[in-house]
Every structure is written in C-alpha cells, then in structure tokens.
Image (cartoon, rainbow, N blue to C red; front, top):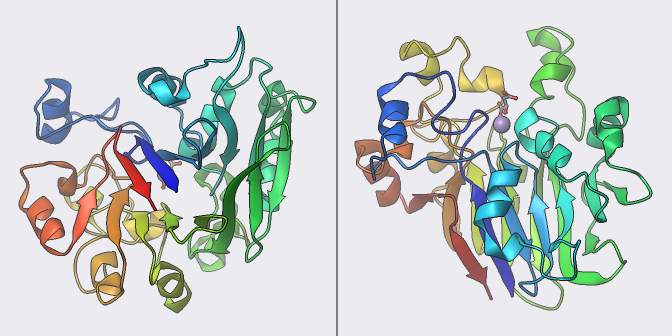
Length: 311
Ligand code: MLT
Ligand code: MN
C-alpha cells in the first residue's frame, strides 16, 4: 500500500500569490469556495502511515506540516514522522522548505547529483548539519530503496527518470540556444512503488514536453501527478501577468493539441491528477469552464490535503 498526501497543489508563488491582484487571487483571499488557496507543490508518500517521505520541500513546508496531523511528532520530545525528502529539481519552490527542517532531527535527502551540487554550493543549506541530515544520490534509471535516517527500509522504491525541462531559474547561465545551461538531472520524474506490491505512482511536476519516454513511464500508472502549471502556453502574457510563456519556463500546458491532456489521452492511467498549478491557470477555479473540460478528459486538480491510497 502507498499512502499519498498532497501537501501543496500550487506552483511557485502559490495561490493566492503575494503580488497578484488578479480576480482569481482576490477570490482566494476572501474565501470563495471555488477559489481555494493552494500552497506550493509537494506530496508525502508513506508505506505504513507513520514514516513519510516528502517529494520536494516547498517554502510552505512549515504551514503544511502544521495542518497535517500525519506529520506531527509523536515520539518523545523531539522527533518527526518525516523520514526523508526526495527532490525532483532545484527550483526555489522545491528546495527552500529544507530550511524549515533544521533543528537536528535526522532525515535523509535523496536527489540527483546535479541537485545535490546546488545544495552543496549554497552555504545556507549547511544549516542542515551533515552528521544529522544525510544526502543520498539518486541516479536516473536506477531504483533506490527509501530508508529512514536509522537505515530502516520503508519498503518504498523510487526510480527517477529524466524529463524534458530546464535548470532552476536562478541557475540559468546561457541563452535560449543553449537551453540556459540545463544539464542531465536538473529535472527528473519519479516512479514510486512499494516492494512486493502492485501500485505504481508516477510524479512529474515539471515537464516541458511529453515525449515517448515520458509516455512510457506514465503508461499503466495507477496514479499520475503531472505538471499543471498553465492551461495555455501564453496565458501569463495574454493576461498581462508576466512576460514568459510556459515553454520558456519549462512547463507544457494542459490544453490544446500540443498540451499534456492530448499527449497522454490514449494511455491507460488509473487516476490523473494535475499538480503545480499556477495562480494564472483558470483550471484552479472550481467553477471555470476549463475545470469542466479537464474533468471531462478524465483529469482532476490536486488540492492541499487530498489523500489517496494505492493498493
Ligand atoms: C517553475 O516551476 O517554473 C519555478 O518554480 C519558477 C520559479 O522558480 O520561480
Ligand atoms: Mn515550480
């Protein structure tokens, strides 16, 4: 069994975003039930309901822990059910939350060498004392057992795979032609299973394109979390809320013939859930025509606190 807990459904900035005065963000601020706030994207996975591995550490992690009883300490004066963190990229919305977990309770950080090098190069992360918080290297294509800080095998297995994407915004070095200095490992997707059981979770919160390799990973998944940043590639530009397209940010859009819904439509997937939803995406709004269209295509939008159990 794999228990899945959505800690945050939003993209970088969350919903409402601090500097957005859009109608959607204003609706979220006044408690409109069709514009529910979303913290930044993260999920927790657990084999036993007691030891949790978080996929990415959002800047909202402190708030996410406080509102989820599963993540509250129960063992003595200092402890945490959080056994480890698996990172899929080095974006601020994926790593900044590590800084909340700095009070000498042990856990493991699992990430590709490329992302570990980002942590290693930023001295602020040395606040996670290496004698307490260990850093474990994930390699694409290789299956790793997720273990707690005491070395006990959780039973969960993670297999990272390369996904078309981009280096973290603050790491961009070169121009468009050179893909901003993106290297292997800057963006990965994850397959997660429980040893000896059948359920398979696929997590891809950052994806620039659905190629045949991505389709092959998604095919047959019992549960798919997929990049739901934007509805349309140019929505931030046309709404006057930004200058970047989804493609420039490394995110495929949901809708249209070039979108993720079309690209994944013919695959056998148990449950399809969009996560990492940007505050400009109309699909965030429960009463939007885009939400209706998405549901008709067999998708749902993640919400903070959503729980799903895989057999
Ligand atoms: C993204 O997903 O594109 C990033 O979170 C952007 C950012 O770091 O602000
Ligand atoms: Mn992001």
